[in-house]
Length: 308
Image (cartoon, rainbow, N blue to C red; front, side):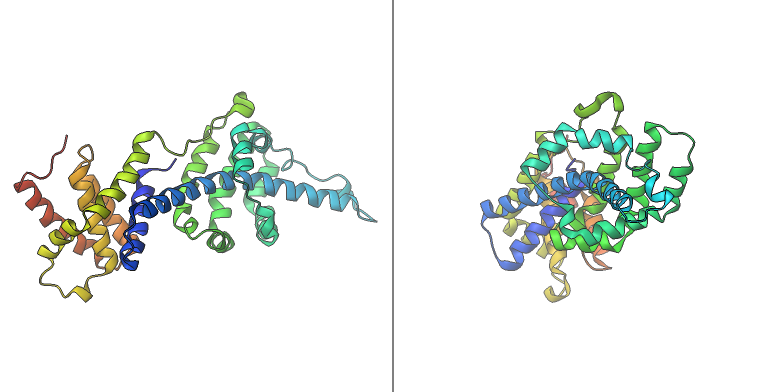
């Protein structure tokens, strides 16, 4: 689930903090990197569990209405399509999810205001109305309902971002990528798999974890060498005019270009230019592109880049 886009972003963030604080403890930086990636994987599971929490909250409301002194006909005989949702019933029993939440517990109801406002938004939505009116009462309909809710309601509310920001300094940066994998997971759910339905692993394979650690190591251990390369092509720029984030991004990009022979140089350049667009100044992308292009030409001429 942790892909290389997210890994690169996290390495940039960790090393930016290291260079700003002049902290060069390699082991400490590595631990922080792996911790931050674990938090991303936490968010994946916690978002899946959110569907269960919202369903349980709605069931609680139904129970409270039935217990009123003078319940209405609707209170006594509510529409239970949401509480009977077959996708959530399968998710609730999922062995992998339940084990993860036991090992790394997290409780959405610690912020019941967020749960209540989110449920209210769902119940007031056209998506919910269409779900109730849909004559096709099937597992696929149940699964599709929650996919639409996540994509069009939950991730569109400011309350979610406020909640995530309070819980972890990494989660707001992760949300778009993690949600894409939650949506992928929902789509893969099959009722025939029951409680054994597979969730996405933290890393696709060991090479992605190795990529994260090695990219951090190469950059931190060779920062001086990479800085000299950058300085050579920015000597006409006043240092204070170059954003600190740009310097960090360029050093990490050089580390990747020089040390990962299986990754095409063009892929590396595109990835870090995109990071610059998201995390640095408005002019950073074109600036970084020009500097890195000149550095790549020099490294190639000196035969310091070897690609498969």
